[in-house]
Length: 133
Image 1 (spheres, rainbow, N blue to C red):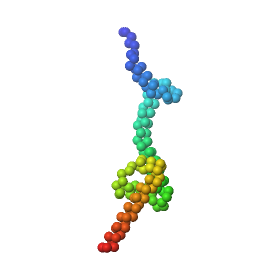
Image 2: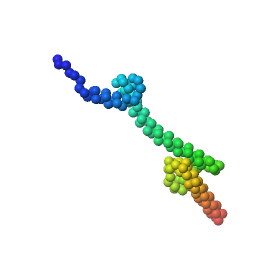
Image 3: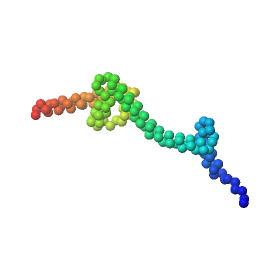
């Protein structure tokens, strides 16, 4: 029986895995079986953390908006602010609102004051209607 030498396919595959795991430490970057396991684990973690990253940023934006809304006015919260934004159909997402709150607080105050004033105007109109009927 003739001797069959292994081709370059397996070596290429292992080399590709080793390049992926070259930054890992110890046996995780040297041994083939460990590198494949670490590669699978790394890919699972990266897939999981991509959605977690979105979640964390949303939490950060909400925290920033809440801090700014609580700063000046007593009894005005983040949830009321967002609720009134939707009622007035002002389509600003949380990312933009957080950037405005950090960089230009006066602009954010103008937005919140406009919402509060519109709310008060609507309440006054409702009171007048109730008095006349």
